[in-house]
Image 1 (tube, protein in one colour):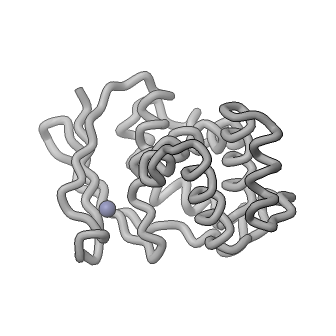
Image 2 (image 1 turned 90 degrees about the horizontal axis):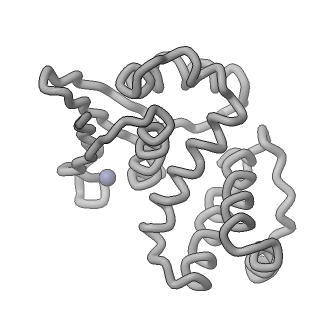
Length: 178
Ligand code: ZN
């Protein structure tokens, strides 16, 4: 996982729980906590931090990962405003993630290990985003989508009827624009 993801996690924990809490979490995980945005760090470090934050706050890990996804969208958008500025609607933005944004991200970062998205644009104001990633972080993807919806001031619901955590080889995220 790229350092930028850790940077945003650090921001979120410090905002919500303070610097002391973040330092205690790093200590408990025996991590130094210095993350360079473009460098890669073990996924297990991130999952360890999330588990620890979950234990300390009593927030279930899944809820935490979803909330982190929302915050991660904001963190990434603040750092890379050109990706947001290029699209005027949430649907346009979501459809640009795979073919435009991820291609640009691959130019910026070496081996970013991005998830794969396929789309089906529904006529009835829905967008199916088919998610595939060996990391199975579909809950993080849901959070990122909610973060984008909030940025575009657009009300949505997300259905997740097919999931890699329920034995499928992909997840279907059905975004409905209200
Ligand atoms: Zn899923």
